[in-house]
Length: 346
Image 1 (cartoon, rainbow, N blue to C red):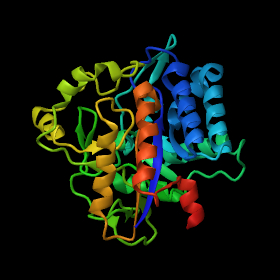
Image 2 (image 1 turned 90 degrees about the horizontal axis):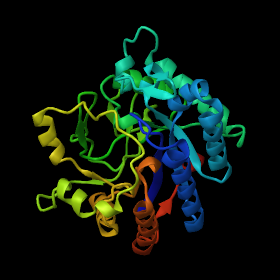
Image 3 (image 1 turned 90 degrees about the vertical axis):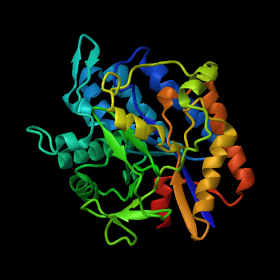
Image 4 (image 1 turned 180 degrees about the vertical axis):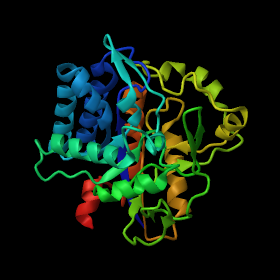
């Protein structure tokens, strides 16, 4: 079986408030990721929050935008990948006396009938700016992959995927298997998916087995929870010493889900990530094993991890390094890759 794994990181500031600094919350942990990746000889992908950078290009050009662009350029120059990640609430957020007043327009679906912005123009703006930044370091650079902010690819999937295809996106990585999350701003329900390791999504947002001009889905590896797991609230207390620094708040804080939605979330899958300090190296291997075993009758499987520099501390880097070593030891055939490399391979 051909196993390909993409180590991906949502490169973004806290979406609510920033309690520390740009460097502490984003630039420094990303540098640690790139340094560890180089030491372990694996490529990584930054799904970068380009609309945040667009606004900070106006709000704080020297303090944020210049080092942000420099970090992306250093990333692609070193053989790693930078791809499109959109948190569109930045477009309607305000910046007052150096403090961001976040908008509740959390997903692209909020802009399906917006009086000023539309989904296609938002995607085009993000792709154009990202290409412009990265081509200063790598002239051949072209964005070709997308991850929806907060995994919000539905509703309005027809408008979203049509816009992505028009702007040269070949790959999506917004879907963790069996994942469910809800708040007053967002609803993600991936409990009914094709029973395939990878599949295509057409311009109408429909899942298809064959390409037919669609976008190839590279799902985020995940595993269903078992009824025997320790509840998360107990693990958060038990492993609190592993927790990273709190650099800021989430937009979902203060926007709770309904009681029924919270019940569904209790049974959501667990994602293969390095920024959950309640997980162990053995548990991360369980997730990888589950996905390899589940699709063992297929010739190949391509999947992704999903982590966030802003919520990675020392324990996260221990998880990342140990996982790479364990995955290589158990699956010598595993290939760590990027979306740009997938495109070159055809």
